[in-house]
Image 1 (cartoon, rainbow, N blue to C red):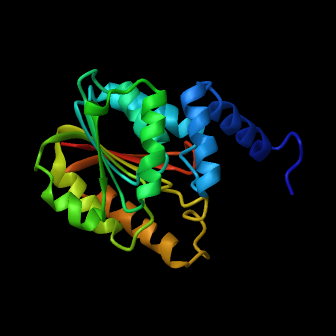
Image 2 (image 1 turned 180 degrees about the vertical axis):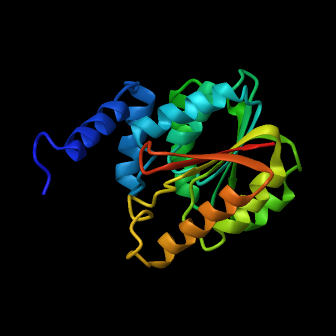
Length: 216
């Protein structure tokens, strides 16, 4: 049991503080309300801010996203990317994409900067240009996640970023006793990314975990 002055309590307080470091504006707040209506949980506030910073660091011009949701992560990426950047975002649910369009509109993003594709990432990713992108963001709990990662590495230019959301699987990943299929899959993906000689990687504790890798 944690006491009020325990290191665990202090660590959790620091995590909560970091999550709220960057206050969100009306566009993101409205998107989160859309998410509640649709039963969609967007990336956390801290993760949204981290995506903006990472896209800015990469000076991203071409961005791919798997898992559009209601557009919180996509808008965050575009806010950090170069002004001429285009986001290609893939989601199988047309209602999600409709909500995301509202989010991009609220955020002042011109329609020409987004390419929203209703479809399965397994079918769409192989059709995208090899080495044509600066950032690939994966936010999808799919049996095909390892294939998505391989496609992402193919799509990235040298210096490009691969970002996997919920990489810690809501704190289940570090617990060896947890053997549910999604957790086992994410452990395998972490090993695959970490051991890939084409990538330099780190795991961030932001939100529910961000696995970030740079393409050599």
